[in-house]
Length: 435
Image (cartoon, rainbow, N blue to C red; front, side):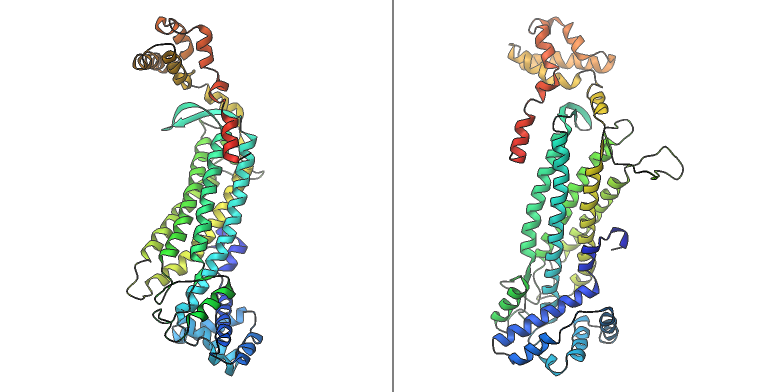
């Protein structure tokens, strides 16, 4: 992933330095487990652990130089370790296959990535919650099909986002658990050269669970689930983004991204204040979905394995986690800093001359004894007239004998009270936030 979208802590997980260090951790955990089972000398395992070191850029360069000859990354890594660690290094990788190292290491990388992403989600949820509480009773128009529907509050819209992010967090937690598995079962998963107890110890030492049954690889449905969860999380971010983008439209102007001192919106038009952050996140969500498709296609490998998944995962592993980390952090900043124009919200709520209260009138007529179909016909006729003439709906209703024959002026007035429509906001918040 390009540096523009890479935050340091997440990016560090996917560096060559980190990758080779994790490979070393896996190999050392394996020799220690073998020693515990009496398969190799305990003294050799102790010496190997004592001779371990922190991987440097020089190590990376040497390993890559060896790989240019061997055309095999794990063999290149092991060759370099043998040169550094001496004769006892012959016990490294005994009875193992490359995927024992690669898949176990990938599980550790994805688990670490998930931990960062879970923290990111928590920060975004808190930012959303703060704004939701602040705007719990800020009235605005609710829209369905892009058309004004009935009054809502900005806080309720944000509460919906908060709850959805909570569900995404639960999905990510579950995916983290299912991806955090390792294997040391050998070339086709039969444990032909190592007992199951070695795998169990390796995974325990590394904080993973053993894959109950594998072939040469950990099965890729686990990875597909993980990347699908990231895509789903991206979809929620995009949902938030496109709503903010709509709210920032010139003819709407209810909510906008912050515009900092010195910021420029256009190279040509000095007046422009564009929703660049949320537009950027809409694009990021597209990428996250594409990675999910690639991960799903990795599930169907030939027989006990092939390496068609390998090139894909070298790209989508870092890219998807880094982009998701970036997207969550950027959306947190947007939500925390967004500018809310309550006056404009009130203006837009009143824009249709009271049409947004039509259902209240319909129900009042039904309660007063009018048949529902008739009541709908009466209210719709006046509503369409209001659309065409721009006359307030309430005035048209007060001039209709079919309506005034059932409802008093006070009854009609009550139908146009936004507080009556939004009277259960506090109850919804108590249920949503359990407070």
